[in-house]
Length: 293
Image (cartoon, rainbow, N blue to C red; front, side, top):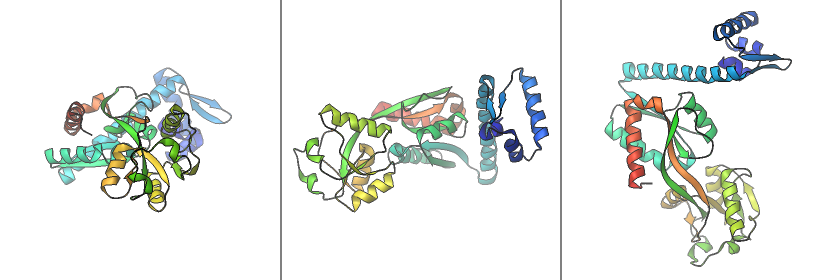
């Protein structure tokens, strides 16, 4: 099911599984007979899942993810005497929530082994739905949560304007957006949520977004370019605070109405049975109730 969904071609799916194409076709026919519904439509361009096939594929991916989790847990327990937790994070939480959560869990559970994956929201939520991740840390509301998933809201994340340390504008106390229009900017990619929120903030004061010298969704590229120039950029304030304390940037003294959104933790309800996941959710709930960032 998964190979055929990924490849959308029976021959390529058969090759991936080291089967002959007739054997793969027979296996699919037998599966459809057992289920009682057609699972894939055969077209001149390959195959595509039916509505019933889509349901089966979701269950198949979750089953495969769960089996892989069991295998990894057994190996960790038998060979290393450890237990596992698999965290996914967006850059917005990678330098804020994630380090504190991992430190708290490792202090509480000395035999804990953490896997931390950083990626975009869609990929992380797909991994969460397939039981390849236990908890995803990042912005809420970017897309609907997968079935059987819930979220803990942690805090709202404003957007700020940043520059290289010692930029001439950092000493100003009455700075306005209008004064930044002629500056060189590193802006988020068009079509991204960050870009849309930034455009809205400028529109609210009757301004168009400044012309960008560069568009990127890379945090490291943004840091590198503002660090070697007088360019300006924007980023969530928690990330900016972290790099400000590292001496990598300054935060301009200007009020922005733009918000990156709410930062939270997303998890599958069935996964809360694992002790490490339960401990993580307890810490995250306390962090939310205590207003920690």
